[in-house]
Length: 295
Length: 295
Image (cartoon, rainbow over all chains, first blue to last red; front, side, top):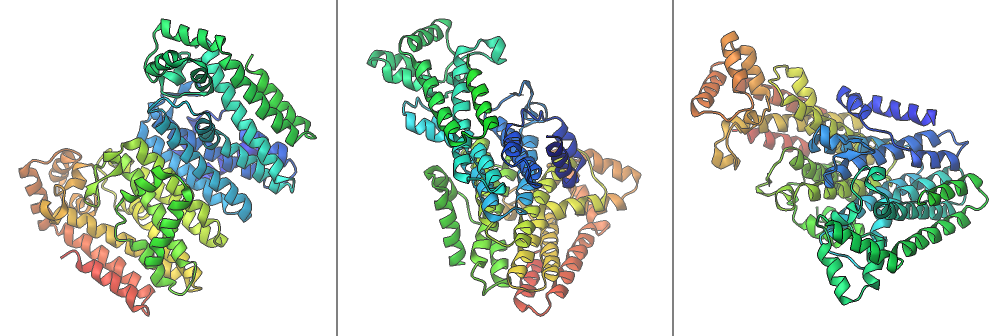
């Protein structure tokens, strides 16, 4: 990973603007999940660290713009650039990181470059769908999963596929791995938003629903409720929740096993991912650790 | 140009999201200056309309984000997407258009793709410098021209250079043409902001200075004033102007020939551009028309 960090530092340096170098130090690098995945899939390719750096710049840019769009004041537990420097700076810095990443991407072969670039269109589209969908209660599982795929899985899918291409491995299998890893990771995140307490989350529990996001457990609950219950749930959407109402939602989710059903889907997707790369023990382990995270 | 419009429509269609198709119809296409330039430089290349469409998508994306950053409510005389749909939609739509353009760019050869992609980093950097510089009175001509080059000339320069590469013409000459066209166009725009009346501009005159932008005539005026005058000018920066103060600025600009000096630079840059492509009468004409625009 040291080589990835050096590549990231080099690209930022090449932008040749002190303001950008300074602002970039304010971003938490996060877990660098995508970069680690790329290095694991293409450990011997000399261009893998650069590809990993590009994907991390894209990821950082997308988070900067996400925070503007979601008006988020926190990112990875610290104040977001949106909060400390304002939304304009977050938009501009995101644009600079995006375009620098794309400029470097051109040095790769067409299929790799196109895979990564197209995933950015997909994730921006997913972001727009996510915002649109928060306007009213969505009870359609397929619509939700399509958005989730675009918004949270396409860049991981593209990173896995591109690094497999770099390493001359079976790109299709690694694409499935990346997509399902991304999807099941996010489904578990959505579950944790309901089952964890405020201290663990660093934000109020059930915040997704308050923000208008009908994640899988809410969709499954809606499906299981009678007409009266459905009405009550819909009426609570996208508003601050009273103690009594959040208690009702949790009880009903327990009664109808909405969390279990969501978790089952995450496990199913994760199993499919393991199946796709079953000979690669390290990649299988990543999934196992992730699935355990939910208990 | 019909082929460029079809290519743009095809790319928007390929994004495959009704919301985007709908939002895109709300954007005024503008003069399509960059597309026209590309078609004039590479009229016989079958990929020229696609390259022109890509550059126009990039330009549209940059304007969407500019309007968020400048909090602009008008764009090309009509309400901006920022005004009617909100800044979040403008950010997301811009990201989608940028990434779609980059995805298509990958189909071109590396030098062409890199030329266009790098110009987007430059223009985003220029945008950030522009915002930074508006915070205090800038009296440094070079700093101003560097920013102006990045923000307003790099994409035109890249469009001219990339289309020359496509047509196997002398890329360096066309790059000079594009850069100087962009710079002199913007300098004349800055002059018109001072010399035109509100009815012509569709916004209050001297709006640049009120917004904190010290364009060339203000820089030249500052240079020519005595210490007391400089103090007065600096004190007026980035505030609504009283009738009396704007009158004083205009009188002093007349006395010190600040407008003429700015116009001389625009003409000089424009002459250099004509010199670079002197055998291409159509390109020379574009410059002549532009220079006349200021009187």
